[in-house]
Length: 273
Ligand code: BTN
Image 1 (tube, rainbow, N blue to C red):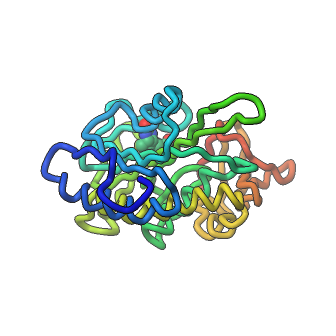
Image 2 (spheres, rainbow, N blue to C red):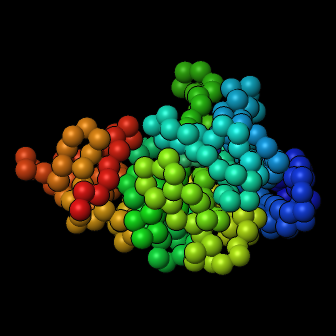
Protein backbone atom coordinates (compact mmCIF):
# COMPACT_ATOMS: atom_id res chain seq x y z
CA UNK A 1 0.00 0.00 0.00
CA UNK A 2 1.22 3.48 -0.74
CA UNK A 3 0.10 5.10 2.49
CA UNK A 4 -0.38 3.88 6.03
CA UNK A 5 -3.83 2.48 6.82
CA UNK A 6 -5.69 -0.79 6.50
CA UNK A 7 -3.75 -3.07 4.19
CA UNK A 8 -5.28 -3.55 0.77
CA UNK A 9 -4.74 -7.03 -0.51
CA UNK A 10 -4.31 -8.59 2.94
CA UNK A 11 -6.53 -11.64 3.26
CA UNK A 12 -7.40 -13.05 6.64
CA UNK A 13 -5.93 -16.46 7.27
CA UNK A 14 -8.05 -19.24 8.71
CA UNK A 15 -7.87 -20.26 12.35
CA UNK A 16 -7.47 -18.42 15.63
CA UNK A 17 -4.30 -16.61 14.62
CA UNK A 18 -6.11 -14.14 12.34
CA UNK A 19 -5.99 -11.27 14.84
CA UNK A 20 -2.28 -11.78 15.51
CA UNK A 21 -1.49 -11.84 11.79
CA UNK A 22 -3.65 -8.75 11.22
CA UNK A 23 -1.70 -6.80 13.85
CA UNK A 24 1.61 -7.79 12.25
CA UNK A 25 0.34 -6.97 8.76
CA UNK A 26 -0.76 -3.51 9.88
CA UNK A 27 2.54 -2.76 11.65
CA UNK A 28 4.60 -3.93 8.67
CA UNK A 29 2.49 -2.00 6.16
CA UNK A 30 2.88 1.19 8.17
CA UNK A 31 6.63 0.74 8.52
CA UNK A 32 7.36 -0.17 4.91
CA UNK A 33 4.88 1.77 2.78
CA UNK A 34 6.49 5.23 3.05
CA UNK A 35 9.69 3.93 1.47
CA UNK A 36 8.06 1.46 -0.93
CA UNK A 37 4.94 2.89 -2.62
CA UNK A 38 2.39 0.28 -3.66
CA UNK A 39 3.58 -2.22 -1.06
CA UNK A 40 1.02 -4.74 0.25
CA UNK A 41 1.12 -7.62 2.71
CA UNK A 42 -0.92 -10.74 2.07
CA UNK A 43 -1.33 -13.75 4.37
CA UNK A 44 -2.67 -16.94 2.81
CA UNK A 45 -3.79 -19.97 4.81
CA UNK A 46 -2.23 -22.24 2.17
CA UNK A 47 -0.37 -22.05 -1.12
CA UNK A 48 1.96 -24.39 -2.99
CA UNK A 49 4.96 -22.09 -2.45
CA UNK A 50 5.13 -18.36 -1.84
CA UNK A 51 8.07 -18.15 -4.26
CA UNK A 52 6.22 -20.10 -6.94
CA UNK A 53 3.13 -17.92 -6.49
CA UNK A 54 5.05 -14.62 -6.81
CA UNK A 55 6.99 -15.90 -9.84
CA UNK A 56 3.63 -16.91 -11.42
CA UNK A 57 2.23 -13.46 -10.72
CA UNK A 58 5.35 -11.76 -12.12
CA UNK A 59 5.10 -13.79 -15.33
CA UNK A 60 1.45 -12.67 -15.54
CA UNK A 61 2.58 -9.03 -15.32
CA UNK A 62 1.85 -8.43 -11.62
CA UNK A 63 4.99 -6.60 -10.56
CA UNK A 64 3.95 -4.60 -7.51
CA UNK A 65 5.98 -4.89 -4.32
CA UNK A 66 4.38 -7.48 -2.03
CA UNK A 67 5.10 -9.53 1.04
CA UNK A 68 3.33 -12.86 0.62
CA UNK A 69 3.07 -15.05 3.70
CA UNK A 70 1.71 -18.60 3.82
CA UNK A 71 0.60 -20.34 6.98
CA UNK A 72 1.20 -23.59 5.11
CA UNK A 73 3.03 -24.45 1.89
CA UNK A 74 2.16 -27.66 0.09
CA UNK A 75 5.19 -27.60 -2.23
CA UNK A 76 7.80 -25.40 -0.55
CA UNK A 77 11.07 -25.22 -2.46
CA UNK A 78 14.68 -24.87 -1.29
CA UNK A 79 17.95 -24.26 -3.10
CA UNK A 80 19.49 -26.72 -5.52
CA UNK A 81 16.10 -28.23 -6.37
CA UNK A 82 15.49 -29.44 -2.83
CA UNK A 83 12.10 -29.37 -1.10
CA UNK A 84 11.40 -27.14 1.88
CA UNK A 85 8.86 -28.86 4.07
CA UNK A 86 7.03 -27.29 6.98
CA UNK A 87 3.73 -27.59 8.81
CA UNK A 88 1.35 -24.78 9.78
CA UNK A 89 2.61 -23.22 13.01
CA UNK A 90 6.08 -24.75 13.04
CA UNK A 91 7.60 -22.30 10.52
CA UNK A 92 7.37 -18.82 9.11
CA UNK A 93 7.31 -18.99 5.31
CA UNK A 94 7.15 -15.86 3.19
CA UNK A 95 8.43 -14.21 0.04
CA UNK A 96 9.15 -10.56 -0.63
CA UNK A 97 8.60 -9.65 -4.28
CA UNK A 98 9.65 -6.32 -5.78
CA UNK A 99 11.18 -4.80 -8.90
CA UNK A 100 14.91 -4.48 -8.25
CA UNK A 101 17.75 -2.99 -10.30
CA UNK A 102 21.10 -3.30 -8.50
CA UNK A 103 24.23 -2.76 -10.61
CA UNK A 104 25.53 -6.09 -9.35
CA UNK A 105 23.34 -8.89 -7.98
CA UNK A 106 26.24 -10.70 -6.28
CA UNK A 107 25.75 -11.13 -2.56
CA UNK A 108 22.01 -10.41 -2.36
CA UNK A 109 21.26 -13.62 -0.47
CA UNK A 110 24.09 -12.85 1.96
CA UNK A 111 22.70 -9.36 2.58
CA UNK A 112 19.26 -10.89 3.22
CA UNK A 113 20.82 -13.33 5.71
CA UNK A 114 22.61 -10.48 7.51
CA UNK A 115 19.35 -8.56 7.85
CA UNK A 116 17.40 -11.56 9.18
CA UNK A 117 20.10 -12.54 11.67
CA UNK A 118 20.48 -8.97 12.93
CA UNK A 119 16.71 -8.70 13.40
CA UNK A 120 16.50 -11.93 15.36
CA UNK A 121 19.40 -12.72 17.69
CA UNK A 122 23.11 -11.99 18.19
CA UNK A 123 23.82 -15.73 18.54
CA UNK A 124 22.69 -16.52 14.99
CA UNK A 125 25.39 -17.26 12.45
CA UNK A 126 25.37 -17.24 8.67
CA UNK A 127 26.40 -20.23 6.59
CA UNK A 128 27.46 -19.14 3.09
CA UNK A 129 25.56 -18.48 0.97
CA UNK A 130 21.99 -18.74 2.19
CA UNK A 131 21.45 -20.25 5.63
CA UNK A 132 21.01 -19.00 9.18
CA UNK A 133 22.53 -21.33 11.73
CA UNK A 134 22.31 -21.73 15.47
CA UNK A 135 25.08 -23.88 16.96
CA UNK A 136 25.81 -25.52 13.59
CA UNK A 137 22.15 -26.38 13.08
CA UNK A 138 19.97 -24.83 10.37
CA UNK A 139 17.40 -22.32 11.61
CA UNK A 140 16.42 -20.69 8.31
CA UNK A 141 16.98 -20.78 4.57
CA UNK A 142 16.73 -18.23 1.77
CA UNK A 143 15.74 -18.83 -1.86
CA UNK A 144 16.07 -15.90 -4.28
CA UNK A 145 14.64 -16.03 -7.79
CA UNK A 146 14.15 -13.35 -10.44
CA UNK A 147 11.87 -12.80 -13.43
CA UNK A 148 12.70 -10.42 -16.28
CA UNK A 149 10.16 -8.03 -17.72
CA UNK A 150 10.27 -5.45 -20.48
CA UNK A 151 12.47 -5.58 -23.58
CA UNK A 152 15.89 -4.34 -24.61
CA UNK A 153 17.47 -1.49 -22.63
CA UNK A 154 14.17 -1.05 -20.74
CA UNK A 155 14.33 -4.64 -19.46
CA UNK A 156 14.03 -4.90 -15.66
CA UNK A 157 13.90 -7.64 -13.12
CA UNK A 158 11.43 -8.62 -10.43
CA UNK A 159 13.14 -10.24 -7.44
CA UNK A 160 11.46 -12.83 -5.22
CA UNK A 161 13.22 -13.25 -1.87
CA UNK A 162 11.86 -16.38 -0.19
CA UNK A 163 12.52 -17.05 3.48
CA UNK A 164 11.70 -20.06 5.64
CA UNK A 165 12.37 -19.85 9.39
CA UNK A 166 11.86 -22.74 11.79
CA UNK A 167 9.80 -21.50 14.71
CA UNK A 168 8.86 -24.60 16.73
CA UNK A 169 10.71 -27.88 17.32
CA UNK A 170 11.44 -29.70 14.07
CA UNK A 171 12.11 -33.34 13.40
CA UNK A 172 15.60 -33.94 11.98
CA UNK A 173 14.45 -36.89 9.83
CA UNK A 174 15.36 -36.44 6.17
CA UNK A 175 17.37 -33.24 6.71
CA UNK A 176 21.03 -33.06 5.69
CA UNK A 177 21.74 -30.50 8.44
CA UNK A 178 20.08 -30.92 11.84
CA UNK A 179 17.42 -28.26 12.47
CA UNK A 180 17.33 -25.43 15.01
CA UNK A 181 14.17 -23.48 15.84
CA UNK A 182 13.60 -19.97 17.11
CA UNK A 183 11.63 -21.00 20.19
CA UNK A 184 14.93 -22.32 21.57
CA UNK A 185 15.96 -18.66 21.87
CA UNK A 186 12.52 -17.06 22.28
CA UNK A 187 10.20 -19.49 24.05
CA UNK A 188 6.60 -19.26 22.86
CA UNK A 189 7.24 -16.82 20.00
CA UNK A 190 4.76 -17.16 17.11
CA UNK A 191 5.29 -16.80 13.38
CA UNK A 192 3.38 -13.49 13.15
CA UNK A 193 5.61 -11.87 15.77
CA UNK A 194 8.73 -13.11 13.99
CA UNK A 195 7.45 -11.63 10.73
CA UNK A 196 6.86 -8.34 12.48
CA UNK A 197 10.49 -8.28 13.64
CA UNK A 198 12.11 -9.15 10.35
CA UNK A 199 9.96 -7.70 7.55
CA UNK A 200 10.60 -3.95 7.59
CA UNK A 201 14.38 -4.30 8.19
CA UNK A 202 14.48 -6.84 5.36
CA UNK A 203 12.86 -4.43 2.89
CA UNK A 204 15.32 -1.74 4.02
CA UNK A 205 18.23 -4.12 3.54
CA UNK A 206 17.11 -5.10 0.03
CA UNK A 207 16.73 -1.43 -0.89
CA UNK A 208 20.19 -0.66 0.56
CA UNK A 209 21.59 -3.56 -1.48
CA UNK A 210 19.99 -2.13 -4.62
CA UNK A 211 21.81 1.18 -4.04
CA UNK A 212 25.13 0.10 -2.51
CA UNK A 213 25.53 -3.58 -3.37
CA UNK A 214 27.04 -6.10 -0.95
CA UNK A 215 29.87 -3.83 0.33
CA UNK A 216 27.99 -2.45 3.39
CA UNK A 217 27.04 -6.00 4.40
CA UNK A 218 30.48 -7.63 4.03
CA UNK A 219 31.85 -6.96 7.54
CA UNK A 220 28.47 -7.76 9.07
CA UNK A 221 28.38 -11.10 7.23
CA UNK A 222 31.95 -11.91 8.18
CA UNK A 223 31.19 -11.16 11.87
CA UNK A 224 28.59 -13.96 11.82
CA UNK A 225 30.31 -16.30 9.36
CA UNK A 226 29.72 -19.86 10.65
CA UNK A 227 32.47 -21.27 8.41
CA UNK A 228 35.25 -18.78 9.08
CA UNK A 229 38.67 -20.42 9.64
CA UNK A 230 37.08 -23.87 9.53
CA UNK A 231 37.90 -26.81 7.31
CA UNK A 232 35.24 -27.02 4.61
CA UNK A 233 34.28 -29.40 1.83
CA UNK A 234 32.51 -28.21 -1.32
CA UNK A 235 30.09 -30.27 -3.37
CA UNK A 236 32.43 -29.92 -6.39
CA UNK A 237 35.11 -31.85 -4.48
CA UNK A 238 37.18 -28.86 -3.33
CA UNK A 239 38.48 -29.02 0.25
CA UNK A 240 40.20 -26.27 2.21
CA UNK A 241 39.79 -23.65 4.92
CA UNK A 242 37.13 -20.92 4.71
CA UNK A 243 38.44 -17.36 4.94
CA UNK A 244 35.35 -15.15 4.83
CA UNK A 245 33.88 -13.39 1.81
CA UNK A 246 35.01 -10.92 -0.83
CA UNK A 247 33.35 -7.53 -1.27
CA UNK A 248 31.05 -9.16 -3.86
CA UNK A 249 30.03 -11.94 -1.46
CA UNK A 250 32.12 -14.76 -2.92
CA UNK A 251 33.43 -17.32 -0.43
CA UNK A 252 37.21 -17.48 -0.02
CA UNK A 253 38.54 -21.00 0.46
CA UNK A 254 42.24 -21.63 1.00
CA UNK A 255 43.17 -24.93 -0.63
CA UNK A 256 46.44 -26.79 -1.25
CA UNK A 257 46.52 -25.03 -4.64
CA UNK A 258 46.05 -21.50 -3.23
CA UNK A 259 43.10 -19.21 -2.51
CA UNK A 260 39.90 -20.13 -4.38
CA UNK A 261 37.02 -17.69 -4.87
CA UNK A 262 33.74 -19.58 -4.82
CA UNK A 263 30.92 -17.71 -6.53
CA UNK A 264 28.57 -20.34 -7.83
CA UNK A 265 25.32 -20.63 -5.94
CA UNK A 266 25.09 -24.10 -7.45
CA UNK A 267 27.91 -25.23 -5.16
CA UNK A 268 27.10 -26.26 -1.61
CA UNK A 269 29.62 -26.10 1.19
CA UNK A 270 29.74 -27.75 4.60
CA UNK A 271 32.13 -27.78 7.52
CA UNK A 272 34.48 -30.75 7.42
CA UNK A 273 35.70 -30.50 11.02
C1 BTN B 1 16.97 -23.43 1.39
O1 BTN B 1 17.35 -23.54 2.54
O2 BTN B 1 17.34 -24.25 0.52
C2 BTN B 1 16.03 -22.33 1.02
C3 BTN B 1 14.70 -22.52 1.68
C4 BTN B 1 13.72 -21.42 1.31
C5 BTN B 1 12.33 -21.74 1.82
C6 BTN B 1 11.40 -20.59 1.63
S1 BTN B 1 9.87 -20.86 2.45
C7 BTN B 1 9.17 -19.48 1.64
C8 BTN B 1 9.67 -19.50 0.22
N1 BTN B 1 8.82 -20.36 -0.58
C9 BTN B 1 9.45 -21.45 -0.99
O3 BTN B 1 8.95 -22.36 -1.67
N2 BTN B 1 10.72 -21.43 -0.59
C10 BTN B 1 11.01 -20.25 0.19
